[in-house]
Length: 291
Image 1 (tube, rainbow, N blue to C red):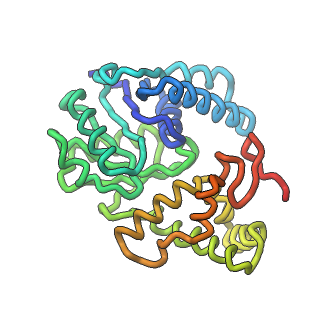
Image 2 (spheres, rainbow, N blue to C red):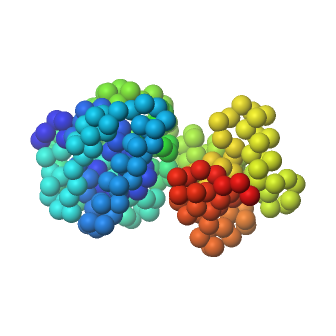
């Protein structure tokens, strides 16, 4: 087992952010996906993210090269076996997470740390299929991972003290603040933010104000960096719909029932910044286009 090697399964925005955060803190990362095109796209996305950091915050080209040089990719799952930490970041489907974590449990060293990213999925439910359930812990990152300094730590019923301690140590090394939360659907950040976003969508649907004015009122009125509708576009409307449906199913509370306007946008594939249109329109660099 290589102490400085972290395995990562997933190529989406959260996975890319995790990889960059690890690499920029001098950890070697190997990303697995069975799809070579997805791996290539992830590398391109990470390079683009760093370019934006260079442009905005003065990160140097040397720092970019150093970070990207620590990130490798593979389509062979066995190549992950020597890692000391395993991250899963593939989505919010219970059976998919169970299947993947079971495979990672089988190929990893008995001392390795197993981390699943989660917004609504139970760590305990996933751990039931593992031979070493005490090694599994959940983390909920916020996007963009490499810029947002807070992480939610989620223990399952069988997560060991040693696993929690190892996770705390890793997050400290990554210069991340963390809160430890009880295992409950949505945890803290998702449960608090979704009703706000959902209500902003209802206000827009009911014609009380324009999307621009709704965001201006909330952003300036409550000293936020981003309005709720712009934040929804940033997260991804399909992602938000999935979270709301999951929490509404689990908790049965009306505040999580997805707004019909959200469903319509997702049905029309207006998913936010990633499709260049959601509640607002965007250019290819993610900048809002004036109506």
